[in-house]
Length: 578
Image 1 (cartoon, rainbow, N blue to C red):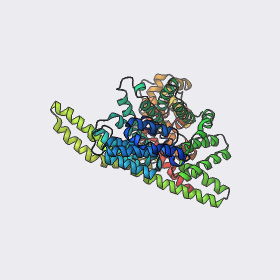
Image 2 (image 1 turned 180 degrees about the vertical axis):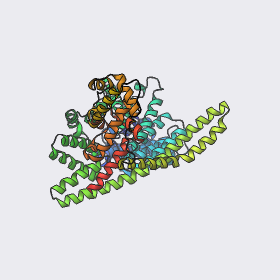
Image 3 (image 1 turned 45 degrees about the horizontal axis):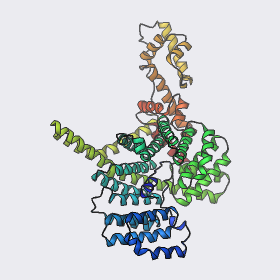
Image 4 (image 1 turned 180 degrees about the horizontal axis):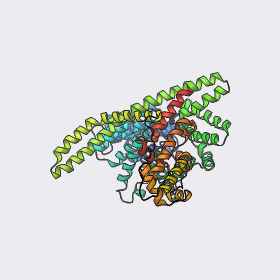
């Protein structure tokens, strides 16, 4: 495998699946080389020292492809010694690179550090950036997302300094993937979108930058899936799967098919999702397999097959318990197992499940907090500063740069305070909303005043029918419009619109949204089973056509997104279970 091919494989980040890295315990996966091969290699050492680096690398690639790792080790020794003798820094780094792909993680990190050290003063476009990228990949594989993020940010800043757009794109996508995995899907989606915008500036970008394009389609589909923006997610999924089919790329096709299975699940097509997941799940391993098993478990629950669901949850436990690599829904997995073992009166396994629930909850909370802070301080703020510099240069050319300089400097100081205050206000709003102190209510009609355009007897009849309408659940229908309601109330749309505008003090569409959102808040607070729904499921329940339209209406009415309310209610449910 050549270096270019390896770089693609190690940077295939998947927000809802484990990254498949090539550095995982490869040195113990192959048998030892026969002695006669060692002797053959050693007898040609002098020859190899006199040959070209390209010839040595061809032999190294060949040994790697054959899994001949001892021969590869010997070849890298020749490569490194030749580079040292000739004081060739870049070839020395290349020799160390080959060692990172065959050694255990700790030693691989040491070789990555050697690459960084010997190329620290290099003017080459890719160094020492590449050494930090290698370290980031190894730490990601070890599950240490904070150190992985730290090295990717360092690599990104070096790529910016050297104006290396390819490495900037690589690091940005990796940073976005880690943020996505640690509770920042909005930030991840923004980074992916910016990266796609940059890529689209290149000629024939879909083919010239095929690998980068496919990674972006894959990660954008998953990021929007995490945000319950199913229409957007399916748009990127379709673009990716169509491109994979046109290129006859079976690996990409499989990955996108699995994204499609997750979309089918959230859209309620459980049987289709189940068939797809079962076809591919056993080709996966680690966290990626655990995540797909979670969807199979949830489908089994919805189908009433709780025994099969528990079997899947137990398989997830065996994977995650061994790897210590949790994923978003791991707390629910252990909550289900705690309840199951409690009902089975298996106290030993119940205690074990509770301990794991507590462990992973605290682990994810502390890790996510550290990663979010790290990303904000080391990535977001420098990015804002670069944007600020660009803006200042543009405004300076127009003669008003001094004013903007002071404004942007103040923004950099206030951004942390603003985000903190905003988060506190959001939490307060959520608690008040759930407590009922700021529950949205329709205004009380002033029946003493009425529009002259509607006869009094018709007005009274419409108001009486509206009162009955509000006590029903008919307003939760997705298809209901003013013409239909007017017909059902035996009046016309003009009278109905006038009465609603006057007495409800809002337009007909806002009147319906008001009723739906008020109902949503009441039922979410009193019906715990609704907390399992995604945005599309909630939209279906409360009469909205899409999850995005439900989210917008909820925010417009309450000032907070439904995700904040759902999070608070889920935390209260967990507290009651424990």
